[in-house]
Length: 304
Image (cartoon, rainbow, N blue to C red; front, side, top):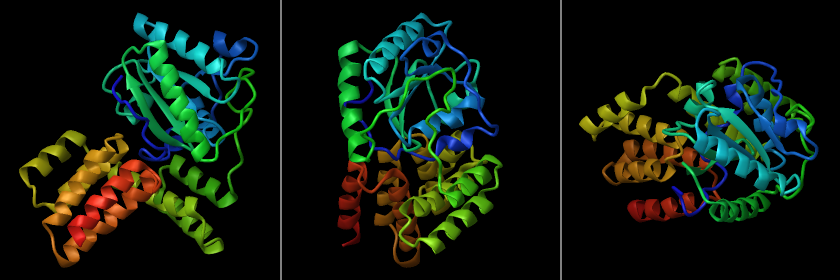
């Protein structure tokens, strides 16, 4: 197992931006059987599958039917998820056939298992894992879901991943549609409109930060950005780029540590610039996330 504790719900960005088409889930033997909450997911179906994470944790297994370790793991995950009776759903992704999905999670190896809660990735583990380890992770994941208000169940799949997709508020849906079209300016405008209608719309505010993160990173190359930041430690823009990419890649603590360290070396307007970016990233990750709380303490020590 790569992690002992499950990260909180906001690991990076709203992954519903992955799919650009109205999705249909592909058939699978697991999904076709009675009372199964497991389904094969392709790129077209992924957006709908992410939508299910508004109701229950949606677990994504990135693997390959040509890799026996993946096949064995998927069989184990299917049994464990189905035994939960609708508290979780499981999407099986052939990462070799659909590399875009694997790239979105910055998967370094397969199998890799990630949960989604309210559209946000919660990295679980890479490689094989024992049943008791996965069961313990599921216990923690269920507790995390309850904390985020997801304590119900969904019906089993009946051949599509869309049966329980929740309806979004119209302006939020408008923003998601704009993200799907790659129009991040329109998406941010829709979220601003939602905030104007409802100033306490926390999801809209976080949506703005997420869209900005997507826009800032859409054309970045991780390796080049890291090299630039390493060669120029005082280059604020370079450090901000790597922090953004680390958040998207799930390396949340690294991103926070980078920016807190940078803030400690800055003064006045430059310090405030980086502090504001860090606050936005806190919101994207989730202010209840223990990693955010830990970083806030370190930030306070630097500032005061």
